[in-house]
Length: 98
Image (cartoon, rainbow, N blue to C red; front, side, top):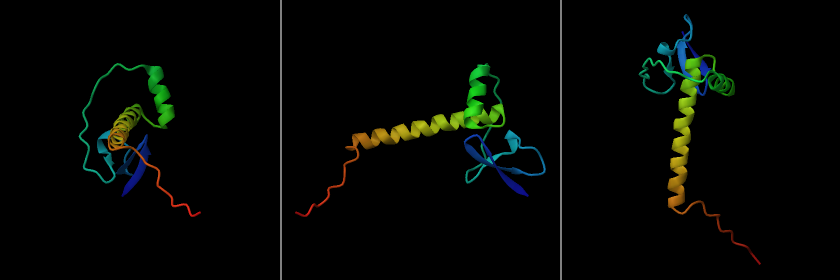
């Protein structure tokens, strides 16, 4: 049986028999994610603050959610730049009857 869990900002499916492990998670509606183990030095206070802000359960979920947020923000800013280049948002003209 598959269950759905929210880990940070991402929605994942995982098998309910076992623990929610990073290797077994598959984002809903997407192909399986290729994960790679990394050893990094990270500021503990920043990680704890991000974990609290994102509501993540694990450090891995915190980093994954933070990376998702950065990618999302980049996509939004790129879209806004394209809108600005195309002339921006123009208010709709209203016909006023006199």
